[in-house]
Image (cartoon, rainbow, N blue to C red; front, side, top):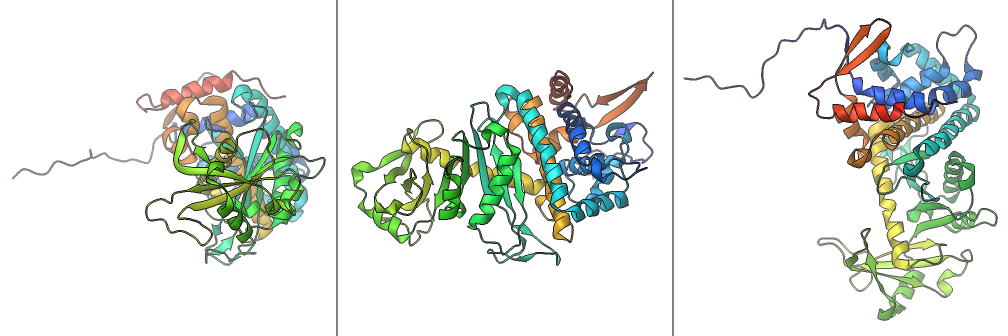
Length: 458
């Protein structure tokens, strides 16, 4: 009787390899840090927290943790993966040193947070200038999406509380700059809140918007060229009034709850007033229509606000709500944008769904859980997560093209960062040789060539 043939070849494993570099593709992130000047900016920002005779720079420590998170880590101890490769990442601090720095920054409260955020904003302006036509403001406009994220706590942590989904944890409010259909997005705000924080709390939305605006170049911190986009959680009187306040003049597109007043107005809209909804490619969306509501339904809201409602046939198996009408699913949003067709405005608001992709990427990059116990520590962790997400957005924007620029963190790790390499020293030069047979080696080498063409920071 013949023995069955194994599906996979049998190999002998030995743990004594030399000059082998794991996660060799992470040189893309290291080179991005170098070319954008992020290392210099973070080091300068955290210089006040460096003790005399300290061996490790606080900025380098924080950036090392962010790199580990970008590569898939989800706790401070995962910085050990960088410590194992000094030829690529340099000298990396020990776990106790990393923990002490986080505790020190947490004890400094808002002072440390402001320093880190100011450094990120400075580098962001520089990165957008380097990206030029690929930058989020290439069309002389910027879109910021705000959305809440539920982060489950698996132990009793400070400010963890029951959530509206009957889970237990925190409910941070995040802000992301949308890169449009040709890119991903980058974080510009992260407001840590208890799990029982309200979804439609206007004060929290105002604070998150202020954090987001501070991350943008100065010319986008006020004016119609900046669009603030939210779901129905942002559809409150106080938040909309703050966005439209004289001197701020921000554009907005916020979801609205279908109240009884709105519902009654929808029932009075004549059939001739409904316009077919459109898709991103300009084609008509079958089974969906939009209309603008006017009259006393706008009483009490800021001047210039427009209320646009969408009705569509529900998907098979979907259950209608009490606020739906005539067998149609109703949704509504408010905007202050004038001079554009309502179908185009409705499509623009619907593209807010890309924020869900950004949240999925954030969960895969350190936001699956908050690993530290105290709230002040987890605020520092959120800044680390945002730095990691910045790198995962900036590197594709500066170095990748085509569909590769749309890859989310998990795909970047699988195809690029996990590439094997061999470190060869010749004379005074160190050369990292990547596996020739790896399908995406050419993506890495081409991306590194593009990064090498960028001017040195400073």
